[in-house]
Length: 370
Image (cartoon, rainbow, N blue to C red; front, side, top):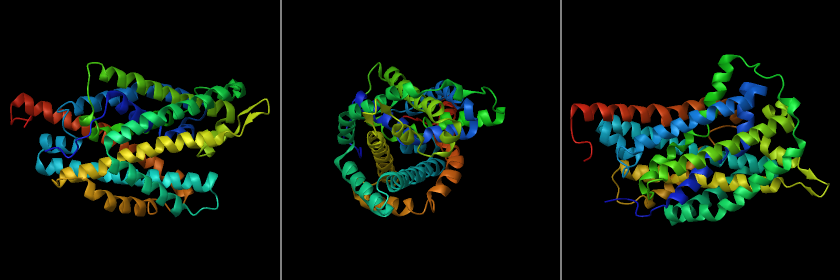
């Protein structure tokens, strides 16, 4: 008996996918990419686009081993009780850490940029309450809410991009091709696994989406558009703020919004950028929270995941304050290791599952569809 009876339409799944792809990346992507490749960060971003879509293709192929099962169930089915259970538990740990990290990002951003006098714990608590409310309403409700909020998010993002073009200075991209190859390769890995790798959460959502003949095509088209949007923000950061400010401002896109000034009339619209970022990060965090409680219920063979929502919420809130002692530690230490986590859960484990599945299928050892 399935733990989840809600179903997502293709458009709802794609909308949630765009929120997950862009999510917190809308603010921190420029600083992460520029720190490694400097003036060549936009080149690394362009190279990472097709590679990121290849990673998505790998994850979809893994999910299609049995499109009715989540990654927890697939791991047990393909790798067996012990190895599969360890892989599933590892995914749950990642979902827990990721959800806690995004809560911490919301706390740090709101506490340092907007509500400077508000204790970060209060902001984090409010975010967790909203997460609990959203996940308790169910997956289908999250999908419908994402469709409602997506037009506002898209308009804010398009306005940011269009209104900044008068301030573009192409000379800030020089000198080009001056980045050492190891640094360039490392930055490309960031561009691939930082935004695209975090789509591994859809291993827990994909089985509950209604699939059509053109579903995979639509997924790639819209993720390509999302990737182009991220790289446009990176390009604008480099050409409007310059390399130094892009690298040393963790919230470069928010600073970009502060630079908009059309005729001394249309200005100071950074609140719109903050709103767009909060919307996308909320849905991204809600998906990781949902994946955590659903996957835990599946691994423990519970009858419902809803009894786990409140305990998981307390864990996420507490862990969000243990992840880093301050924003400086977060900026300097976490990104270097986060890309390795994404590499593991979006590439290594899916590839392992595919290889073992095809080996077992070829040798005829066991009926994998049971």
